[in-house]
Length: 116
View 1 (spheres, rainbow, N blue to C red):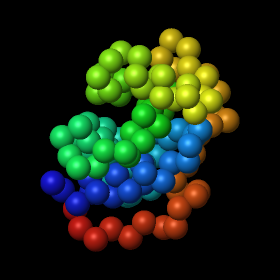
View 2: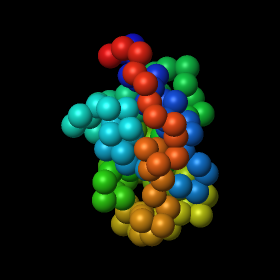
View 3: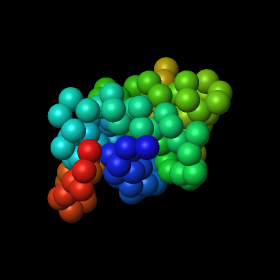
View 4: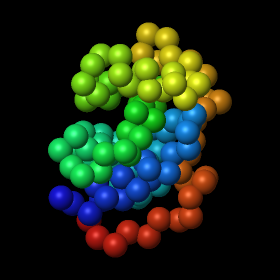
């Protein structure tokens, strides 16, 4: 597995309860230019890895859409997990997106890549 997957997992692990971030915000923090899709790929491998417990449900697209919901076993599981944290979801979208958005670039120390 590529080392940037581990970096994606570590950032995702740090998303606070009741907050969401975007694939692009994680990619930007990690210095992965145009890497939002790569962040998504990394998160889809969680079901096949020992990294269960990482709150991947807190990662949505740049508009607050639950585009990763297909990877949660049921069509409503991602939304249900977010709702259980107090996040309002309607039609597979975070309604109060700007209020609950967490930007790793603002809340974590600068990322120093080891290798990609």
